[in-house]
Length: 410
Ligand SMILES: [Zn+2]
Image 1: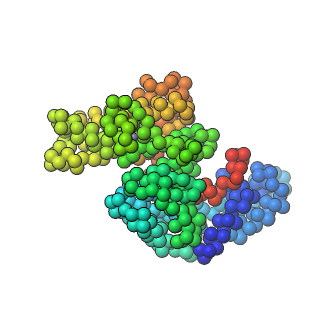
Image 2: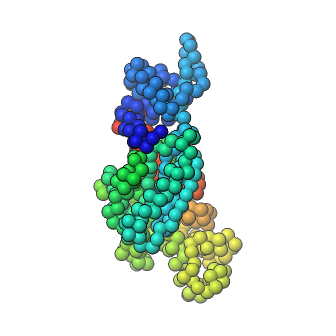
């Protein structure tokens, strides 16, 4: 499939009835034409015509025969997820990671490149296009056709225009990510904040499937959330909904890089965990961590604190338990405000497992109101090491498969 045709085919698929039928086949397939007509309220001839076009495009295939309700057994339709791929890019603080994945979220290939410190917009975009180009070059066109690109990027994003308004760790402002990628590769592009994209990934492929009110909380080098309310990603008035890392949990607390004091992020992010370990050792606490960095405490990382805890280091265990307590306070505030049925934890702190989670759950039970606390389950993500990139892939899938009035079609 030529790239011009792919851009055209995106427009073609986005026509409302096609999008609606694709959505129903994805959600309910294998499914018969008659059932599609019933669910979409489209007439049987309209369904037949559109299904024929979808069969021709090879996005949909005929599978087994269904149960008969008296007459001939109907032929069932399903999505051919393996034939097409989507590029998913995650722009972190130090690296750009990219995958191609099939329409059911299976990763086919992975590449990554470092980002130079404080890059110019041109340097950054050169790395970004390089990652995308490598993924396109490595794709065997006879096996997979690439439908589009999703980009999840840290910081503040305008998803309507696909612009990175502010990427604090890269010191970049107003970078037209969507425009540059669409012009360079002639593929449709969706851009969103990385954690918001991750929440969509959880709702399609992870533990948010079928759940209307859940929050995906990412705790890594930063802290953020993606909020799904009534089945939709909540953006807020200026796209910053979910910035829970900068809610205050201690007005006397340490300085945060946002300029405030005592933000949640200043207690529980990876760098904050390392900082607390460093301060404790400087005040005389005994820990194997001091030997690991040969006394150069600036080398400490959050990940090292986790490894030391696994080896039974008492200071490291205490620091992770405190992390659970702080994060539990942050989550209790979120639970009282939004009353979600699930919170999905992702990122390095989620990988620290019980060292953090036990205290976290305890704190939530103590601090959140009884009714919302009993209604929520707190779990860790199972999307694996490419969770962020899968989230970026989902940005594109969401756009492609969701008809204008998706909420009405269950
Ligand atoms: Zn802050």
